[in-house]
Structure formats: structure tokens, C-alpha cells
Length: 227
Image (cartoon, rainbow, N blue to C red; front, top):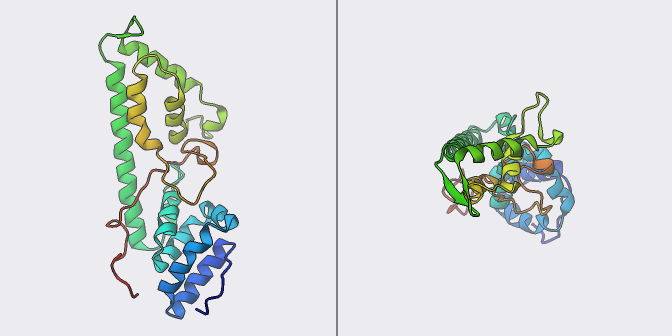
């Protein structure tokens, strides 16, 4: 408000700033100021995954597109227990539920394509005759190579880790086709996280990161200038 620089180093501080901005009717001003905060504060960015639920609600209040989109990706994970179930704002929870439905549908499409490739007819691969059963065997081998770190407590693979493993495996049969089908699931739309860790890897072994929101999907009027 007085053109002084602002330093926000934690999710708690950002949520408090959102509350104060709302109280003093400075939401628009504070939303614009935040864009300069994110890229100069790795500590704050690093806190986003663990505090994405409260930060998503704060960014909704501030109508900050960058923070909202980043937090939305994080609340959609992990696959086994998505954080969006803890959201209290109905608009945000409904948005996440719709995104979850699209994810489930996309996974179903990939699985159907895998089955189709498994029963595909004979083809020539590098001068040798191959069949869908050859692809099925390779699929089983690729799956068996998932490390213990990529399995949950019951021994089942984390879905993002499973698809990452298939994508990285050097298939001799239908490899290019499989990569083409899986690639959209492994897309990473995070902007603030510059760690380079991808879906199905490391801290994101059980997280898909492709949840991209268009301007029309944002839960507020993007053309409104005063709120």
C-alpha cells in the first residue's frame, strides 16, 4: 500500500496476508504484488505442496492465477489420497472433483489402448516378426522393474510411478505408440517448482502434474477488476 517491498517466507504468512488484504479491501493490490514474491522466495515455493489446501483457498480469495494454478495441481495429489478432499470451499472442491473424473477417464483410455496393443496382430519390428503377445510380455517385464520405493504398503505400484516406468522402458514392440498414449498423463504444468522432478518420480511418485486450468475454468470472473 505504501510501495514498500514485502517478504513472505511461509504459507502461514501468505494466508495471513490474504486475510488482512480482505479486511482492508486490498485484495487486488496484494494479488498483483505477489507475482514479485514467488520467484524471489524459494522457501515459500517449497512450502506450497504441504500447504496447498490452505494456499489454494487463499489464492482463490486473492484471485492470483499463478498461485491458484500451482496449488490446484498439488491438491489433486497424491493419487491414492488426494488433498482436495480437505477443501472447504464448495466451488474449489467441485472443480477438483471434475478434474478427478477427467483423470480417471484418461487412465481408462490408456488402459484400453494397452489392451489393444497386447492383442494386436503380427508386425515387423527391426526385421523380426512380433505380435501383441510380445508386447504383453515386455509390459510385464517393465512392470516388474518398478522399485520398492514405487510401491504402496500393500505392494501395489503408485499409478504415476507405474506410467513413468512404462514411458522410460525401452519397448521393442509398440514402444512409440505407448509413449504417445502415456505422454499426456506425465505432462508437468508446474511453474513455480523448478526442481525438475516429474510426475511419477521422487516426491511426485504418486502425483500427476498435468492439471491445467484455462481462463474459463478459473472459479472467478477474470474480467472483473474490483472485488
